[in-house]
Image 1: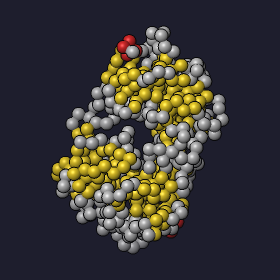
Image 2 (image 1 turned 135 degrees about the vertical axis):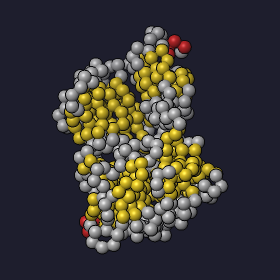
Image 3 (image 1 turned 90 degrees about the vertical axis):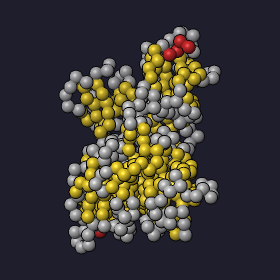
Image 4 (image 1 turned 45 degrees about the vertical axis):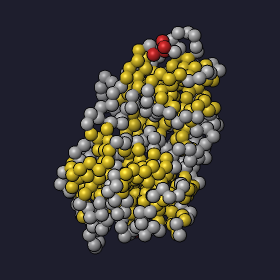
Length: 479
């Protein structure tokens, strides 16, 4: 009825009336929400980026009920919308699974039961009722950067005929919407114009290092001569850029790239169809090959120790949210993973100190996310709070004498690292990042610094950052 907005806030699902008043908590959640919908009988159906689909009464009872369950190899389920019968809904399955793509299932099915795959595409998919009466309805989705509509029978729950192009490039996840009255809106929402910029310690922009891509997370090579970057959340392609040659090379599809200590190889997390770590020579001299695998939930590399002996990884737990584990590495081969930080709180963004004696990480307790440092390999031997008013995306200087992190509003903070019983000083502001480069609260690190700690590389937004939206009235008339 358009009277209430439901939204995610840290580890809570909230609702607020559009007429005003305080937000009300519906339930606790284990990770950031992706998408969802509201049923006619006042149930809110939603998913998170690390789990299946859940429902909770709109009145709020504090308890969410699972509607789907991740199968082996799957990373997340994203509910798309309820079909006209009020019993079936569309949802996207991501990960290494025979059901990867757009699926259909009933609201009352057992969570462990798989859905029925409708499309193999990694895309949002919405049902639109037919306005002409000549067809039962349409499924609108994105394939190869083209917005398509395909005839769909909501009674037989089947697509029929060929998909018809109805728009140019649109974000495949959430980059479009349709109304029941026959309107369509689409656009590359949230992309903006991104570039990698160098800043000095005073916050003065020195120069633009690389532009022309929809950069997401970035990682400088150990010698600072190259950078690995993920090209936008939608495509998740890893590229390497050489600053002196001004050349770029495609590595593979994946996320969270980590350099080997000698800068010769990359390790990254599989995202398109597989849950595994992969590795490849940074020069492209060999093909991508598996490095570690076997996880049932979203697991990604976080950092590799400077001696190459330990790989820190972030994983999703059913009851504990995000956690950190460590894989011992010997002879270039990983051993069995071992828990490092597993608790009822979310632990993420782990970074080894240059001496491998500490790990800087983000821990979320309730609605607060702060930077902490824990001893390694035994986290119970020592733990220090670093930030006091919110902290994200920590990074160490290469000499280990400084620790940096970001605040939610994009201020770069510096902490002195000393010897003795109190090794960490009080955080002071270094500078405010000139552009709203990205929400700092995301656990994907979008900045880095050189070995001497004098220059900082930031993923920034530039120019007109408002992505245009196209609205098409009566879009079915031309089909």
